[in-house]
Image (cartoon, rainbow, N blue to C red; front, side, top):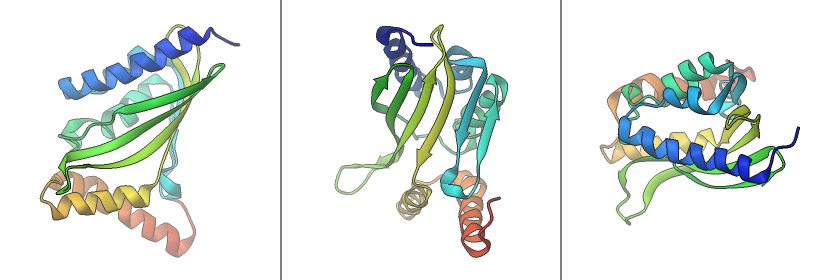
Length: 177
């Protein structure tokens, strides 16, 4: 089904604004209720090292917007701004960044870019989303932040080190965890 362009654009603009609000609140899980249909599917392949698939709003709340973006997991000081998007019927491609805390010595942000492939499902909500980004660049960014004293120890312990291990295991064995 095709929805009016204005309706689709209003939804992605709303998501962009919700990300800004979530950064202020320090809470992300509420976004699942506001922007995702009950039966929405969210996927992120993490460069082949770990495939995440959340089936339904509750799983999206627990994984993507809970475990993966919740500031309690070490992401405090990070932001995830949506920079722009393109819309074709009900399909959206959005460009965003994983932006670490602080600034590089040259004044630029510590960040890596990614894209989301999103399907709009009506009623201001999405029915599908796949996030894609270069996990090797994300790991390098975390190394830079660590060297600058800006990487939270919990994030390094609970996310960066296990992800690096998964990447190494995948490359050595050819299997995905």
